[in-house]
Image (cartoon, rainbow, N blue to C red; front, side, top):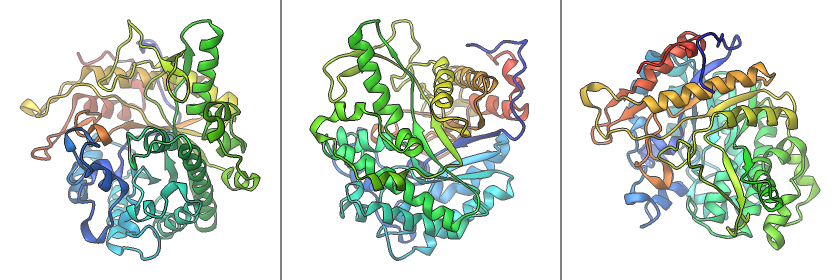
Length: 457
């Protein structure tokens, strides 16, 4: 899957090259200027919930350094920037009173992006539910669909037109698997009965937010999911069945209801008596016409039957594989396979690669104003080649957002994993573009053709 010198790597006209972040991971100052606390503010300040007790109180201090960060984007030649909005900055209580200072922050950010010819891709929800709504049941409360539509409408009225690409939810699978089933992420619940309810209500909220956008907005809106191909570890019937369960749980649990109006039947098998019978009317709300789907891709899973809960399926480490600092195998062919599966299953809906990247070891301090990260360059190069292959096979891919623009707070893993193409010294907040950032800038400038050039090492 390595690019070759004799291949033409030109990407389609209008293909957007950018990078992505999330509000809680970079902004810091979570309670500044009238903002309310989120579930992540609360979770991170609960002893034992994050590595080293790390919080988002400072993060990358983007809330105060946003102009400098946009300047770096311009220097790298980014054409697009995907970011999320902190719901509790806009509505401190989750609903009701609008905090104008919070709204003004994002309005200024969008204006600065547009001034730099950088297209904003705005995500409404990247995991930081207002704590006030969690106190009312959070995603377990069916009223959350109305809460989310209200929040979305505030932003649509303020920013639509300047923002032309909107995302409702980022990675609903992670929200429920980490936050409601296994307790590793906010709000820290562990319940097989709660997880399906939260998942379903997230999808109802997604549908309500799309409906609200059609009433207020005039441009494009979509959904972002994290998915990965599942390959059976052997030819045994047990591994084949385990692979099918894992595929349905991660890859179809949210795309099927959003695009087909139904859940895959394996979910009832997985959850057993914890799987509810949902009202048919809910699916009419969920299955709204979308303008695009965003796919976040990091790795694959070679899957075998085991006794893990609740899937009775687990990933098998590959002895000859290359693995990142997060324990994820580097497997670019999986991205091509996944994109082709998406097209076969859901048709010709436009796709953006809304996250793709890797955590490799980087030093805490950039020596001599340089960070050498050849493994990250190799990762990005091979995955961009995989995307090019999928485009050649007919998948309508409109853009690529590298994860992440900045090193940042990796949720419950704290600051221990660095995904950024720009290094952040957490002691001084100094930013240093890594070699991967410079390399990616060249790929953008050449519109992909530079993928055939030799690596700079």
